[in-house]
Structure formats: C-alpha cells, structure tokens
Length: 228
Image 1 (spheres, rainbow, N blue to C red):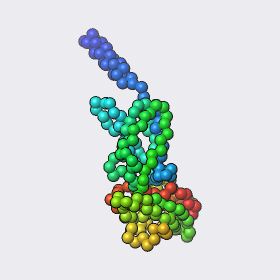
Image 2 (cartoon, one colour):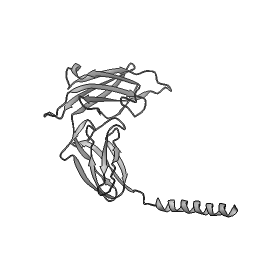
Image 3 (tube, rainbow, N blue to C red):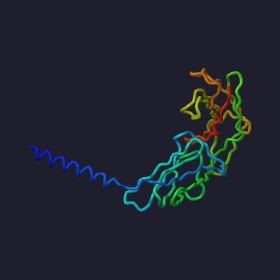
Image 4 (spheres, rainbow, N blue to C red):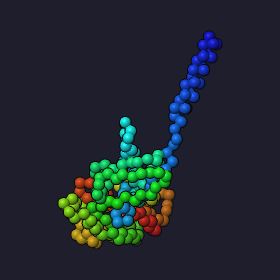
C-alpha cells in the first residue's frame, strides 16, 4: 500500500510540473493606448459601455480582444507584439467611423494611437454653476453629421454625482429634456436640485449627455467639479 501511495504521489507531482511547463508562455508586455477623438478633441462617453475589438489574424481559432473606452474617451490595452485589425462593432458609440471599417495596426513595443471618429453631435461650451442647492448647466448641441446618416436628438440629460463617475447609472440627481422640447440647440439650459449627501461634502461632479435616435450610447461633456 505504501508503494502504491508513493507511485501516486510521483504521478501527481509529474502532472503538476508538466502543467507548469505547458503554461510557461511569455506574458503580453506592450501597451496600446490613446483616445477616441474628433478633430483631436476627446469623445466623452459613459463608463464601460463603448468598446472596440482587436483581431489578430493568423490563428486557427480567432477571438477578439475587447477594449473598453473610459469616460474621458481614453483606452489602454496590454498586448503581445503583432499585427491586429481594429474594428468597432456595429452600433457602438455615439459616432460613426471615418473611412474603412477596419484599421490595420502593428504593435511592437508601446504604441500611442488616437482614433478619429465622426460624432453625430458635439456638446459645446458646457458651463456649470451651483446656486441655492441647485446645479445648472448651459451648453450648445452642435450637429456634426448632416448627410443621409444624420440623426435627431432624442434627449439631453444633466447628471450630478458625488464621485467623478457620472452618467445615467451613477448619479444622485438627474434631469432630462426631450429632443422635441429643445427650442434652440445653441442655447440649452437645465437645472437639478442636489439632494442631501451623506457623509456631507461641499462639492459634486456633473456633466451633460446627449442621446440621438437609433443609438444606445450617449456623448457627454467632460466631468466637472462644482463647489456647492
């Protein structure tokens, strides 16, 4: 019986070492990073909602690497060196791609790559103020795409939160104006009351978002801190 236990122990140890050798691959060590931009200006989105895919050709079984865009439009991916095809899935983002649907990129060490897109609208001159427990935002909605692919404004929203993550999921106060109720896209104003915050803090973060018809993802102004 002791001999059998000894043999079994040797077999288990051999399997463990073999497994370690099998998994002993180099780890990815090159960063691909940059920002989604329009004419060099970052495209602000909601956190963890917009992504693009990286495909590495040449593998018998190929699966995409999903790269999530941060709320300020930036992204970062840790990759192996190689050639990749960058693709935005259909319907992703409050924008359309420019030129070819697929971008060929080569990663050989750290690489910075800003990706130019064309948004349906841009939020311009967003200004925030706080008076009497209310946060007020004024801004302009500039229509960028005016051809056959143009879309109407479905709604605009003002979001307020106690942290720097501010969107339709993470907020303590919000308000909305329907697209049909916007009298002048060059002069939009909206206000919302800030509720009592526990623990107490004398500031909040805010930004405005715009949703077009037929697209799930919104475009936003940059997050701004507002002293109460």
